[in-house]
Length: 96
Image 1 (spheres, rainbow, N blue to C red):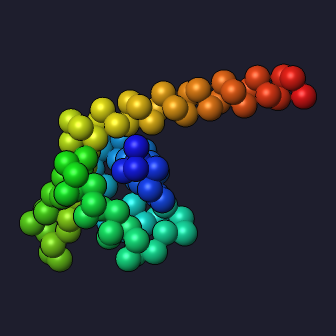
Image 2: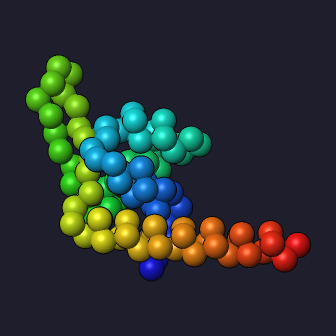
């Protein structure tokens, strides 16, 4: 749980759900995150086996990030939590 509850971590996993993204795309997706924090989160998630770092032989070289099978499992859990949150919010709005 501590891995997923870290700042920006769930958001990062969420934005990688559609496939590989490069650093600048993730930086753009996660408005407000600093390059230092994004780098730190990417390294942590790579070390924990949640995502893969995929260098591409372009000029200049580009690095992409993608979810591992474990990352896809975490994505399923995050999606479930989001669905429950939406239902709770709809219920709270109906009661108000």
